Length: 425
Image 1 (tube, one colour):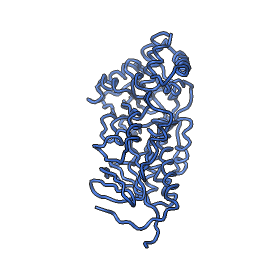
Image 2 (tube, helix red, strand yellow):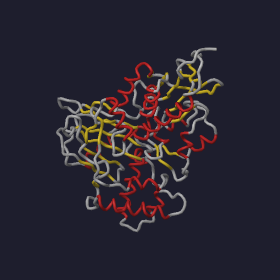
Image 3 (cartoon, one colour):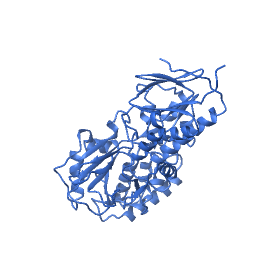
Image 4 (cartoon, helix red, strand yellow):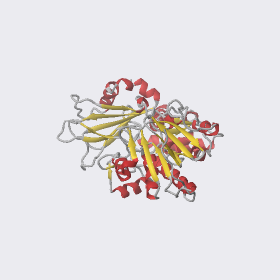
């Protein structure tokens, strides 16, 4: 009989979910291999330097940006890696309207509160749009609330559950943070701790259950692990043409009830810094902000986020930043834009390894779906922001889901002796 060895676990995806899982497993003494299709780690957490024409480059977030209250798991990983947060000086929750400045944030907050209360009285699982249509309020206020929901959930109000109002209705002036030097610093630091266990440029093509483990095939190699954690974006998980995963009907059915929204980011250089700010365009379904960066000053950049497929199509985001940039500049005449420098647009729906932004719940999502989304299929486990009921669509949700998947693997494998195994193929 072969001698027992450390259990082996393959982690598919080097985003925050996958790296959080791999970190937990590595610290538990497991032999971990992380396979990432991109040539970088971080997934939808992507920081990059933007040329603003100044003596320094500003680090912008092309993906996930704001760290909010309750991000306890993320803060623990930041402590582990020696990274720190910086306060942005503006609030993610409060956005002044550019088209109708006479409608205040308090007006929208009150409408959101009424909508959330109304949703709780309606039978079944209504959509957000069903609730909005029942509000007896100034239509401009209702439309502003509708825009806020569509921007934040990245899907239309007729598709997303009214439960989204519980988050959207928060308009308190709470602080917002970023990782100093860029949010991607966290996945980079976790990958550094894991060392050669993280292999970029390895696109997984197929995962197969075997009698004695799980086989993972890439374009370059094949290997068998005792367990595998699938930490890929929702659209990639449920598209069998991209990655063949063992998804029985009960798993596929629940996956299909979750929405993956559509969003893009925009960054425009400024000739000079401006005060911190946050504004929202109801018509364009985007919001913009200026914020403090790691230098302690407000970065000379206007940042933007646009949500929903209809908004991205109307702004022709797939063609580049021009139309959106013009709209953003028109919405902020108080800022001095450097039009000699190109704006930077990131269309996550066009990214072949994401095919969308982050997830939201449709009215068809059931109370126990979160457990089913994370439920393993044999020794194949699942993690990702789409599986987390409390922090759906957020960095914190990705991290927590990865840690839970790792804990499940440890629970399953910790007392099971494992014989030596060789790579296949």
